[in-house]
Structures are given as C-alpha cells and as structure tokens.
Length: 296
Image (cartoon, rainbow, N blue to C red; front, side):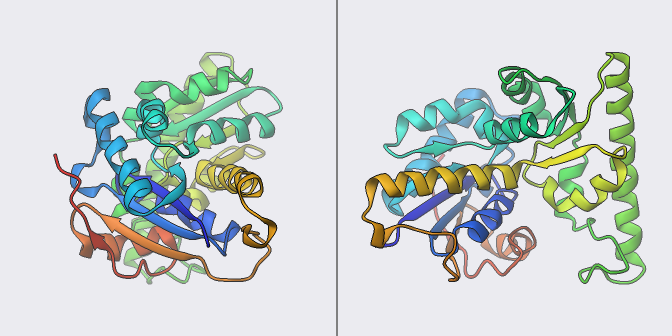
C-alpha cells in the first residue's frame, strides 16, 4: 500500500513545499490542506493557532490516513509544532528547523539574515533555531511580499514563459523594487551590528516564487536558502528512513522511481480561488479541490 504524506498550511504558500516534495518522492500519495477560511494565522493568539493547526493535522491523520506530516506553514511551525506533535501519532516536521540547518551548512561566516512575515519574525523562531546551531541571525519582516505574490506580481519578463508583455513586466519591477528596499534596510541593520552575513533564509513559503528576483537583489556571493526546498529535502530523507523501518522493501517509496505523485487538495474556504491561485504555487493544476469544514 502506498503511504500518504499529509501537508498542511494556513493558506496556499505551503504548496511550494508540496511541489518540492512531489519532485523528491514521485511515487508517494499526498494530501494537502489549506486552512484558507481562518487565515492569516499571524493575527491570532498562540492558543488559537495551536487549536487550528491541531484540527488540521488531525484531519490529515484521521480522515486521510497520513503516516507522516509536514507543517508547511512558518507561523504554525513556530507557534504550534509541539502541540501538533502531541496531538497526532505520526512523525511531524516543520519548516523552520530544516531552513536553519540548511543555513548552517551554507554559511561560512556564521552570520545569517532571515526575511519572513511579521508573525514569524515576532516569534524569533528562526533566530532561536539558528542560535542553537551556532549561527547569529538577524530577522526582518517583509509584509508586502505575500500580497504581491498572491497578486501574481512575480514574473520577470523576457524569458519567463508566464510573463505577458508590458504590464506583467512592470508589475515585477514594482516587486523587485520592494525587495530591494527591504534588503537594503536589512543589510544596513546587519552592518550596524557588525555582521558579515553571507546567507539569506527565505522564511516564508510564498517567497520561493520570488527567488529569482531576490537572488538578483542580494550582494554577490550571498547564498539564498529556500526553506521550502530545505524542508522537502529533510522530509524526504526522514520519510524514506521511516518507511525503511516500518515497511518491507517492496513497499518502500523510492525517489528514483519515475511515476507521478498523486495529490489530493482540501481547503476550508473558496475552492475556486484555491484552484486558480494554488496552481501557481504548485507548478501544475491542483485538480478539483475539496471543501471541508473544521469548525470554529
């Protein structure tokens, strides 16, 4: 029997993690839940975030038989990971620890920059995870980036197949300028603290769609860590290890197999919006998204 990996986010951004996971585990079955009726989580209390996240995790485990969970939401990973791990009987991985681990592997100076949403920055989860690995981290909230991504202002013009002439290119220029301003402020703050930062962590699952623009804006030689890719890499490794311990060899999931991952998507609100917007994050059509009700 092919096992199921559950992936959860408060909205759409976690589909970038699912996209990276499906590439690494093409023979797996995935169930993705976007709790779109109750986003943004960042404006809620820690207790409420934990309750919402636990409900979502339990749906994936109890209703979809997920044997492994990836919390593809920075806010839930920062504020509710312990509660989720206590609530479900399967392995659970968040996005923050893999991002910090990838930063540790990439950085030579030990000084790391992080851009994320307000809620993630205020939690200081990345700073703590980096500090635990001997890194010095400086975080910056970039609240304009998520709405720019969701409006589709991410295309680069020219060779980008998704970029229409004129208008889309101008939209991308606006986003590029916003990124430039945020990074200039962050680099100035880092310099004032005497930090020789050589690594930038994208601490939001929306930001992979901005990676080409961000890489153009960072100083030469600075490594950009995509937390979605880092999480998928860690999840694939842990999942295969888990399967090798729990399953016989003929039922193990191997990333070398050339099949297409099976993906089933659920949302708690506006499945039409999820289908249209989600395909941009997933890099392929989401298929028919199923509406569910998790309660209040």
